[in-house]
Image 1: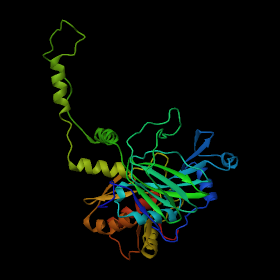
Image 2 (image 1 turned 180 degrees about the vertical axis):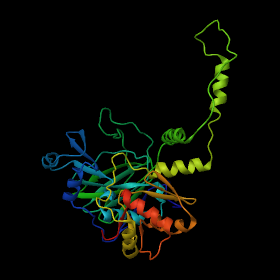
Image 3 (image 1 turned 60 degrees about the vertical axis):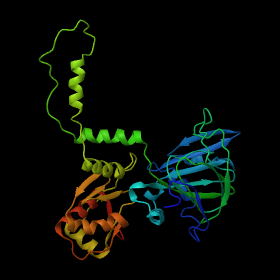
Image 4 (image 1 turned 90 degrees about the vertical axis):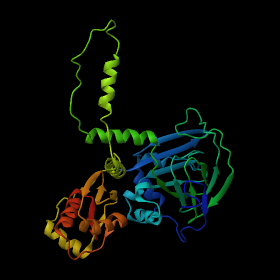
Length: 360
Protein backbone atom coordinates (compact mmCIF):
# COMPACT_ATOMS: atom_id res chain seq x y z
CA UNK A 1 0.00 0.00 0.00
CA UNK A 2 2.79 2.40 0.87
CA UNK A 3 5.10 1.70 -2.04
CA UNK A 4 2.94 0.46 -4.92
CA UNK A 5 -0.80 1.11 -4.65
CA UNK A 6 -1.69 3.66 -7.36
CA UNK A 7 2.01 4.41 -7.78
CA UNK A 8 3.81 1.75 -9.81
CA UNK A 9 3.48 -1.84 -11.04
CA UNK A 10 4.45 -4.81 -8.91
CA UNK A 11 5.27 -8.32 -10.13
CA UNK A 12 4.77 -11.01 -7.47
CA UNK A 13 6.13 -14.42 -8.38
CA UNK A 14 4.23 -17.31 -6.78
CA UNK A 15 1.80 -14.91 -5.12
CA UNK A 16 -0.61 -17.80 -4.50
CA UNK A 17 1.46 -21.00 -4.30
CA UNK A 18 -0.25 -23.94 -5.96
CA UNK A 19 -2.94 -21.78 -7.61
CA UNK A 20 -3.94 -23.18 -10.99
CA UNK A 21 -7.32 -21.49 -11.34
CA UNK A 22 -10.88 -22.05 -10.16
CA UNK A 23 -12.69 -22.78 -13.42
CA UNK A 24 -12.17 -24.92 -16.47
CA UNK A 25 -12.46 -23.60 -19.99
CA UNK A 26 -15.83 -25.39 -20.22
CA UNK A 27 -17.06 -23.74 -16.99
CA UNK A 28 -16.27 -20.31 -18.41
CA UNK A 29 -17.97 -21.06 -21.73
CA UNK A 30 -21.15 -22.21 -20.00
CA UNK A 31 -21.13 -19.04 -17.88
CA UNK A 32 -20.61 -16.87 -21.00
CA UNK A 33 -23.92 -18.21 -22.34
CA UNK A 34 -25.77 -17.32 -19.12
CA UNK A 35 -28.00 -14.27 -19.56
CA UNK A 36 -27.24 -13.18 -16.00
CA UNK A 37 -23.50 -12.92 -16.75
CA UNK A 38 -21.62 -10.21 -18.64
CA UNK A 39 -19.38 -11.72 -21.28
CA UNK A 40 -17.37 -10.69 -24.34
CA UNK A 41 -15.72 -12.59 -27.15
CA UNK A 42 -12.76 -10.89 -28.85
CA UNK A 43 -11.32 -12.30 -32.06
CA UNK A 44 -8.36 -11.03 -34.06
CA UNK A 45 -8.39 -11.96 -37.76
CA UNK A 46 -5.85 -10.68 -40.25
CA UNK A 47 -5.04 -7.66 -38.13
CA UNK A 48 -8.72 -6.78 -37.62
CA UNK A 49 -10.51 -6.92 -34.28
CA UNK A 50 -14.00 -8.33 -33.78
CA UNK A 51 -16.08 -8.01 -30.61
CA UNK A 52 -19.27 -9.79 -29.61
CA UNK A 53 -21.12 -9.13 -26.36
CA UNK A 54 -22.93 -11.87 -24.46
CA UNK A 55 -24.95 -13.68 -23.56
CA UNK A 56 -23.23 -15.81 -26.18
CA UNK A 57 -24.70 -18.76 -28.02
CA UNK A 58 -23.13 -22.21 -27.88
CA UNK A 59 -22.57 -21.92 -31.64
CA UNK A 60 -20.43 -18.81 -31.05
CA UNK A 61 -17.98 -20.94 -29.09
CA UNK A 62 -17.82 -24.04 -31.27
CA UNK A 63 -16.60 -22.39 -34.47
CA UNK A 64 -13.67 -20.45 -33.09
CA UNK A 65 -10.22 -20.42 -34.72
CA UNK A 66 -7.37 -22.31 -33.09
CA UNK A 67 -5.54 -19.13 -32.07
CA UNK A 68 -5.94 -15.38 -31.41
CA UNK A 69 -9.22 -15.10 -29.57
CA UNK A 70 -10.22 -14.35 -25.98
CA UNK A 71 -13.34 -15.04 -23.94
CA UNK A 72 -13.94 -12.74 -20.96
CA UNK A 73 -16.61 -12.99 -18.25
CA UNK A 74 -17.19 -10.29 -15.60
CA UNK A 75 -18.54 -10.82 -12.08
CA UNK A 76 -17.51 -14.46 -11.79
CA UNK A 77 -17.67 -13.98 -8.01
CA UNK A 78 -21.48 -13.76 -8.38
CA UNK A 79 -21.63 -17.39 -9.47
CA UNK A 80 -18.90 -19.34 -7.67
CA UNK A 81 -18.25 -19.25 -3.93
CA UNK A 82 -14.62 -20.19 -4.66
CA UNK A 83 -14.34 -16.96 -6.67
CA UNK A 84 -15.58 -14.86 -3.78
CA UNK A 85 -13.21 -16.74 -1.47
CA UNK A 86 -10.39 -15.68 -3.80
CA UNK A 87 -11.40 -12.04 -3.36
CA UNK A 88 -10.95 -12.37 0.40
CA UNK A 89 -7.20 -12.47 -0.30
CA UNK A 90 -7.50 -8.79 -1.24
CA UNK A 91 -9.23 -7.46 1.86
CA UNK A 92 -6.30 -5.18 2.54
CA UNK A 93 -8.22 -2.94 0.09
CA UNK A 94 -11.56 -1.62 1.50
CA UNK A 95 -14.69 -3.34 0.16
CA UNK A 96 -15.95 0.03 -1.11
CA UNK A 97 -13.21 -0.02 -3.75
CA UNK A 98 -13.64 -3.60 -4.94
CA UNK A 99 -15.46 -4.14 -8.22
CA UNK A 100 -15.39 -7.78 -9.26
CA UNK A 101 -13.47 -10.79 -10.52
CA UNK A 102 -13.15 -11.12 -14.28
CA UNK A 103 -11.88 -14.38 -15.78
CA UNK A 104 -10.53 -14.69 -19.29
CA UNK A 105 -9.56 -17.67 -21.39
CA UNK A 106 -7.37 -17.51 -24.48
CA UNK A 107 -5.57 -20.02 -26.70
CA UNK A 108 -2.08 -19.24 -27.96
CA UNK A 109 -1.77 -15.70 -29.30
CA UNK A 110 -5.05 -14.60 -27.74
CA UNK A 111 -5.44 -11.16 -26.16
CA UNK A 112 -7.48 -7.98 -26.37
CA UNK A 113 -4.68 -5.71 -27.57
CA UNK A 114 -2.64 -3.05 -25.75
CA UNK A 115 -4.89 -0.77 -23.69
CA UNK A 116 -5.29 1.41 -20.61
CA UNK A 117 -7.56 0.70 -17.64
CA UNK A 118 -8.92 3.53 -15.51
CA UNK A 119 -8.78 1.39 -12.38
CA UNK A 120 -6.36 -0.69 -10.31
CA UNK A 121 -6.11 -4.35 -11.25
CA UNK A 122 -4.36 -7.48 -9.99
CA UNK A 123 -3.71 -9.94 -12.84
CA UNK A 124 -3.44 -13.39 -11.33
CA UNK A 125 -2.41 -16.23 -13.61
CA UNK A 126 -4.36 -19.48 -13.49
CA UNK A 127 -3.65 -22.35 -15.88
CA UNK A 128 -1.13 -21.81 -18.67
CA UNK A 129 1.15 -18.84 -19.23
CA UNK A 130 0.62 -15.28 -20.42
CA UNK A 131 3.17 -12.71 -21.51
CA UNK A 132 2.51 -9.24 -20.15
CA UNK A 133 4.04 -6.13 -21.69
CA UNK A 134 3.62 -2.83 -19.87
CA UNK A 135 4.43 0.83 -20.49
CA UNK A 136 4.14 4.13 -18.63
CA UNK A 137 3.59 5.92 -21.94
CA UNK A 138 1.32 8.95 -22.15
CA UNK A 139 0.39 8.45 -25.81
CA UNK A 140 -3.24 7.37 -25.66
CA UNK A 141 -4.17 7.47 -29.35
CA UNK A 142 -6.43 4.53 -30.23
CA UNK A 143 -6.80 2.54 -33.43
CA UNK A 144 -9.57 4.16 -35.43
CA UNK A 145 -12.78 2.18 -36.01
CA UNK A 146 -11.70 -0.71 -33.76
CA UNK A 147 -14.51 -2.06 -31.54
CA UNK A 148 -12.11 -1.93 -28.57
CA UNK A 149 -10.00 0.95 -27.26
CA UNK A 150 -6.70 -0.47 -28.53
CA UNK A 151 -3.60 1.70 -28.34
CA UNK A 152 -2.23 2.59 -31.75
CA UNK A 153 1.35 3.33 -30.71
CA UNK A 154 2.07 0.92 -27.86
CA UNK A 155 5.76 0.94 -26.85
CA UNK A 156 6.43 -1.80 -24.24
CA UNK A 157 9.06 -0.93 -21.62
CA UNK A 158 8.98 -4.14 -19.55
CA UNK A 159 7.65 -7.64 -20.06
CA UNK A 160 7.32 -10.89 -18.15
CA UNK A 161 5.78 -14.31 -18.64
CA UNK A 162 3.41 -15.16 -15.79
CA UNK A 163 2.91 -18.79 -14.81
CA UNK A 164 0.24 -20.30 -12.52
CA UNK A 165 0.15 -18.45 -9.20
CA UNK A 166 2.13 -15.44 -10.44
CA UNK A 167 0.49 -12.01 -10.19
CA UNK A 168 1.01 -8.55 -11.65
CA UNK A 169 -0.44 -5.40 -10.06
CA UNK A 170 -1.02 -2.40 -12.30
CA UNK A 171 -2.12 1.07 -11.18
CA UNK A 172 -4.62 3.03 -13.30
CA UNK A 173 -3.62 4.38 -16.71
CA UNK A 174 -0.68 2.00 -17.10
CA UNK A 175 -0.61 0.67 -20.66
CA UNK A 176 -0.50 -3.12 -20.86
CA UNK A 177 -0.83 -5.94 -23.33
CA UNK A 178 -1.40 -9.60 -22.43
CA UNK A 179 -0.67 -12.34 -24.96
CA UNK A 180 -1.36 -16.02 -24.27
CA UNK A 181 1.73 -18.22 -24.60
CA UNK A 182 -0.52 -21.30 -24.65
CA UNK A 183 -4.06 -22.17 -23.52
CA UNK A 184 -4.36 -20.01 -20.43
CA UNK A 185 -6.75 -18.36 -17.99
CA UNK A 186 -6.20 -15.07 -16.18
CA UNK A 187 -8.08 -13.90 -13.09
CA UNK A 188 -8.42 -10.10 -12.99
CA UNK A 189 -9.31 -8.57 -9.64
CA UNK A 190 -10.55 -5.09 -10.53
CA UNK A 191 -11.27 -2.08 -8.33
CA UNK A 192 -13.82 0.68 -8.82
CA UNK A 193 -12.56 4.09 -9.83
CA UNK A 194 -15.47 6.28 -10.93
CA UNK A 195 -14.67 9.44 -12.83
CA UNK A 196 -15.27 12.81 -11.17
CA UNK A 197 -18.00 13.41 -13.74
CA UNK A 198 -19.79 10.19 -12.78
CA UNK A 199 -19.54 10.91 -9.04
CA UNK A 200 -20.90 14.43 -9.45
CA UNK A 201 -23.69 13.30 -11.75
CA UNK A 202 -24.77 10.45 -9.48
CA UNK A 203 -24.58 12.67 -6.38
CA UNK A 204 -26.90 15.19 -8.04
CA UNK A 205 -29.30 12.35 -8.82
CA UNK A 206 -29.11 11.34 -5.15
CA UNK A 207 -29.86 14.91 -4.04
CA UNK A 208 -32.80 15.03 -6.41
CA UNK A 209 -34.36 12.15 -4.49
CA UNK A 210 -33.54 13.46 -1.01
CA UNK A 211 -33.66 17.28 -1.25
CA UNK A 212 -36.92 19.04 -0.36
CA UNK A 213 -37.33 22.81 -0.68
CA UNK A 214 -40.35 25.12 -0.36
CA UNK A 215 -41.48 28.08 -2.44
CA UNK A 216 -42.27 28.95 -6.05
CA UNK A 217 -40.73 31.29 -8.57
CA UNK A 218 -42.59 34.63 -8.40
CA UNK A 219 -42.18 38.09 -9.87
CA UNK A 220 -44.91 40.48 -8.65
CA UNK A 221 -42.68 43.41 -9.64
CA UNK A 222 -42.34 42.25 -13.25
CA UNK A 223 -41.82 45.09 -15.75
CA UNK A 224 -42.27 45.32 -19.49
CA UNK A 225 -39.12 44.75 -21.57
CA UNK A 226 -38.18 46.39 -24.84
CA UNK A 227 -36.86 42.95 -25.93
CA UNK A 228 -39.27 40.29 -24.64
CA UNK A 229 -36.88 37.51 -25.75
CA UNK A 230 -34.23 38.62 -23.29
CA UNK A 231 -33.73 36.78 -19.98
CA UNK A 232 -33.75 39.59 -17.48
CA UNK A 233 -31.14 40.30 -14.84
CA UNK A 234 -33.90 40.10 -12.21
CA UNK A 235 -34.84 36.55 -13.28
CA UNK A 236 -31.21 35.42 -13.27
CA UNK A 237 -30.70 36.95 -9.83
CA UNK A 238 -33.78 35.25 -8.37
CA UNK A 239 -32.93 31.83 -9.81
CA UNK A 240 -29.39 32.23 -8.50
CA UNK A 241 -30.84 32.75 -5.01
CA UNK A 242 -33.10 29.71 -5.39
CA UNK A 243 -30.24 27.46 -6.50
CA UNK A 244 -28.24 28.49 -3.46
CA UNK A 245 -30.75 26.45 -1.45
CA UNK A 246 -29.01 23.34 -2.74
CA UNK A 247 -26.96 22.30 0.27
CA UNK A 248 -25.59 19.04 1.62
CA UNK A 249 -23.65 17.81 4.59
CA UNK A 250 -21.39 14.88 5.43
CA UNK A 251 -24.36 12.61 6.14
CA UNK A 252 -25.68 13.25 2.63
CA UNK A 253 -22.27 12.29 1.25
CA UNK A 254 -22.10 9.23 3.52
CA UNK A 255 -25.53 8.01 2.42
CA UNK A 256 -24.77 8.70 -1.24
CA UNK A 257 -21.55 6.68 -1.10
CA UNK A 258 -23.22 3.81 0.74
CA UNK A 259 -26.09 3.58 -1.73
CA UNK A 260 -24.01 4.22 -4.85
CA UNK A 261 -21.21 1.80 -4.00
CA UNK A 262 -23.50 -1.04 -2.85
CA UNK A 263 -26.09 -0.64 -5.63
CA UNK A 264 -26.25 -3.82 -7.74
CA UNK A 265 -25.43 -3.48 -11.42
CA UNK A 266 -28.49 -3.35 -13.71
CA UNK A 267 -28.24 -7.01 -14.74
CA UNK A 268 -28.13 -8.30 -11.15
CA UNK A 269 -31.29 -9.76 -9.60
CA UNK A 270 -31.82 -11.60 -6.33
CA UNK A 271 -33.67 -14.88 -5.95
CA UNK A 272 -36.07 -14.81 -3.02
CA UNK A 273 -36.78 -18.13 -1.27
CA UNK A 274 -39.71 -19.92 -2.92
CA UNK A 275 -41.00 -21.21 0.40
CA UNK A 276 -39.54 -18.91 3.05
CA UNK A 277 -39.13 -20.20 6.56
CA UNK A 278 -41.05 -18.58 9.37
CA UNK A 279 -39.02 -16.10 11.35
CA UNK A 280 -38.93 -18.47 14.31
CA UNK A 281 -37.61 -21.38 12.23
CA UNK A 282 -35.15 -19.09 10.45
CA UNK A 283 -33.67 -17.91 13.75
CA UNK A 284 -33.40 -21.49 14.98
CA UNK A 285 -31.57 -22.53 11.81
CA UNK A 286 -29.07 -19.67 11.85
CA UNK A 287 -28.47 -20.31 15.55
CA UNK A 288 -27.05 -23.65 14.46
CA UNK A 289 -25.64 -22.92 11.00
CA UNK A 290 -25.05 -19.17 10.75
CA UNK A 291 -25.59 -17.18 7.55
CA UNK A 292 -23.58 -15.96 4.61
CA UNK A 293 -24.00 -13.11 2.20
CA UNK A 294 -25.49 -14.06 -1.17
CA UNK A 295 -22.77 -14.07 -3.81
CA UNK A 296 -24.37 -11.12 -5.60
CA UNK A 297 -24.85 -8.98 -2.48
CA UNK A 298 -22.75 -5.96 -1.60
CA UNK A 299 -22.73 -4.56 1.93
CA UNK A 300 -20.89 -1.57 3.41
CA UNK A 301 -20.99 0.02 6.84
CA UNK A 302 -20.63 3.49 8.32
CA UNK A 303 -21.59 5.24 11.56
CA UNK A 304 -24.22 2.83 12.85
CA UNK A 305 -25.64 2.14 9.38
CA UNK A 306 -25.41 -0.60 6.84
CA UNK A 307 -25.80 -0.15 3.10
CA UNK A 308 -26.85 -3.38 1.44
CA UNK A 309 -27.62 -3.55 -2.26
CA UNK A 310 -28.47 0.14 -2.43
CA UNK A 311 -30.61 0.20 0.74
CA UNK A 312 -29.92 2.04 4.02
CA UNK A 313 -30.47 0.21 7.30
CA UNK A 314 -30.06 2.16 10.57
CA UNK A 315 -29.24 -0.10 13.50
CA UNK A 316 -28.62 0.08 17.23
CA UNK A 317 -25.14 -0.30 18.64
CA UNK A 318 -25.96 -3.85 19.76
CA UNK A 319 -27.08 -4.87 16.26
CA UNK A 320 -24.08 -3.12 14.71
CA UNK A 321 -21.63 -5.17 16.78
CA UNK A 322 -23.12 -8.38 15.39
CA UNK A 323 -23.82 -7.36 11.80
CA UNK A 324 -20.40 -5.78 11.23
CA UNK A 325 -19.01 -9.33 11.19
CA UNK A 326 -21.30 -10.19 8.28
CA UNK A 327 -20.30 -6.99 6.48
CA UNK A 328 -16.56 -7.54 6.98
CA UNK A 329 -16.39 -11.30 6.43
CA UNK A 330 -19.48 -11.95 4.27
CA UNK A 331 -20.61 -14.58 6.73
CA UNK A 332 -21.89 -14.72 10.28
CA UNK A 333 -21.12 -17.75 12.48
CA UNK A 334 -23.91 -19.33 14.53
CA UNK A 335 -25.27 -16.98 17.20
CA UNK A 336 -27.13 -18.74 19.99
CA UNK A 337 -29.26 -15.73 20.89
CA UNK A 338 -30.03 -12.63 18.88
CA UNK A 339 -31.83 -9.53 20.06
CA UNK A 340 -35.18 -8.90 18.37
CA UNK A 341 -33.91 -6.05 16.15
CA UNK A 342 -30.96 -8.00 14.75
CA UNK A 343 -33.16 -11.03 14.16
CA UNK A 344 -35.71 -8.95 12.24
CA UNK A 345 -33.02 -7.36 10.07
CA UNK A 346 -31.45 -10.70 9.20
CA UNK A 347 -34.85 -12.23 8.47
CA UNK A 348 -35.79 -9.41 6.10
CA UNK A 349 -32.46 -9.78 4.28
CA UNK A 350 -33.20 -13.52 4.01
CA UNK A 351 -36.65 -12.81 2.55
CA UNK A 352 -35.09 -10.37 0.06
CA UNK A 353 -32.56 -12.98 -1.04
CA UNK A 354 -29.61 -10.94 0.25
CA UNK A 355 -28.35 -13.67 2.62
CA UNK A 356 -28.46 -17.47 2.76
CA UNK A 357 -28.45 -19.91 5.63
CA UNK A 358 -25.13 -21.75 5.72
CA UNK A 359 -25.43 -25.25 4.34
CA UNK A 360 -28.54 -24.47 2.26
